Image 1 (spheres, rainbow, N blue to C red):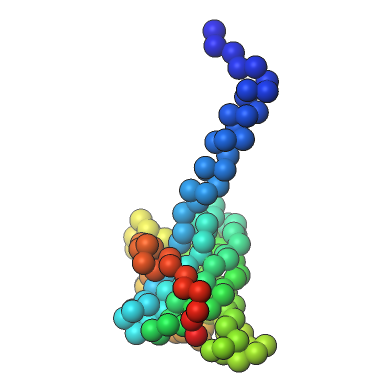
Image 2 (tube, one colour; image 1 turned 90 degrees about the horizontal axis):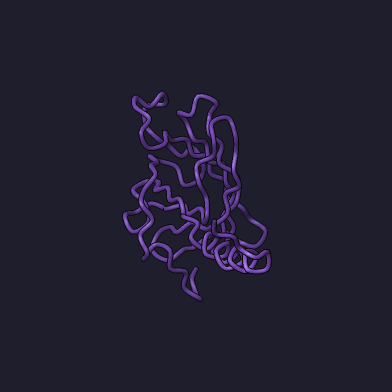
Length: 149
């Protein structure tokens, strides 16, 4: 039988744990066609759809128009029957919205695999407004330039 010595086990766990946390995925929602197509894309860094009937913190950014990047935070909640994800977020960018100004978005969509979708199709009834859908987060979308609007 193979046995780890306690100090070696803690060392091994210490090396593996950071890799797991770094590998957390991102969740992207395109609204109104998404970034680069006349709309916006919300990026939840490290966000995963929560279990049915629960919520998870949304923290990340939103890319909009040609160069606007807003810091975005809020929560995402999955309905008790697991069919509708509601993401409620607020975004800030003083150089674009003005100092002290926030914008709110309330996004409803069905997670992948839900068919039929009880709300018909995804939508953002907040400031960005329009059709909404979960999309793959391409590497180019995840780039944050040092200077932006």
